[in-house]
Amino acid sequence: MRDQRIKKTSLLLSVLLGATMLISLSLYAEGEGKADPRSLKHPLIGYWESKLPENGCLETYWFKEDGTAIFTSGDEQLEARYEVTPQPDAHGFFKLNHRVTLSNKALDCTKQHSEVNTEQTSFVLFKPDGSSFISCDNDDPALESCFGPIELKNNAARSLP
Image (cartoon, rainbow, N blue to C red; front, side):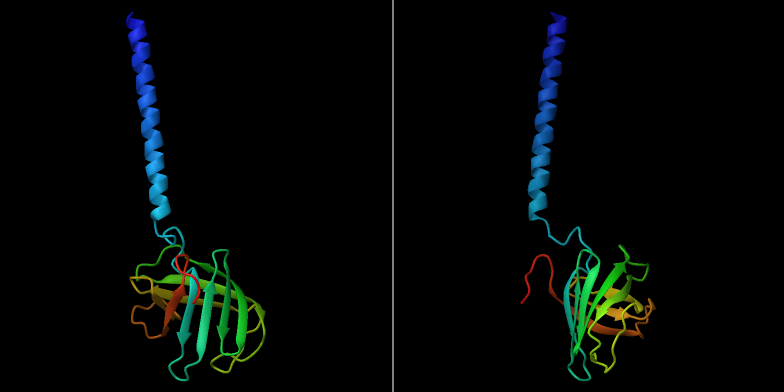
């Protein structure tokens, strides 16, 4: 009789544990669906724009999740491969490297053009709300080598205008 009680108790505990796990997984999945779609992505992913204050020339930056990017500046159009650090450094900067893979060789906003296979390293610092960033030649907190703001125009939660 004692063995039957132990078996019933074990069965009951197994059923309760299973039910608890199912409920927990269901609540977790439900919460995941309501979470910010960018929460698991890098803050750089998205479509960004900036206008040069000197001449109002438009630059756009589209960083895709697959490590490719499309840039425009004036008449220049570029495609690139990029890598960005997953976490910022001690000063809050993400290190961004990109290599041009395709260029239309037209002039950019500064009347220059980029050649295929040229590489560039910059350091990006995001506004706390993620709505814009500045791009710098180094990660000096004095921000003397920076330009921007480069403003977010769409991300995973918004469609293109």
